[in-house]
Length: 79
Image 1 (cartoon, one colour):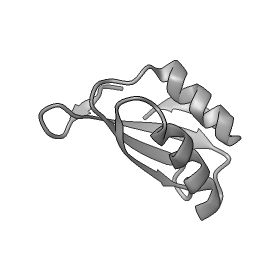
Image 2 (spheres, rainbow, N blue to C red):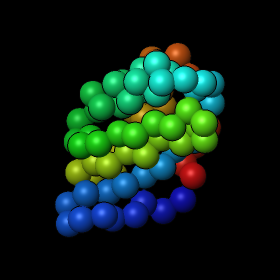
Image 3 (tube, helix red, strand yellow):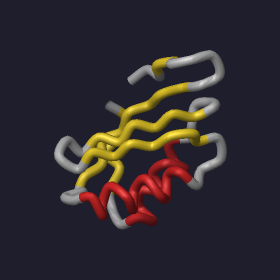
């Protein structure tokens, strides 16, 4: 459960989200997480339930959980 740094000034975190089943689901989750301050990239994959988030600094997991909840899905935790 450690963050992985991609490039100087960016942090990548992978989260497990349940309930995603299609591209629309991926878009909903990505859209909500993208609105968090500092997020530069979000990639949600329904088939694996994984959401990869690149941000300028580590994100507060409670904020990510709230964004996923707002999209109508459940954040299980970090991968």
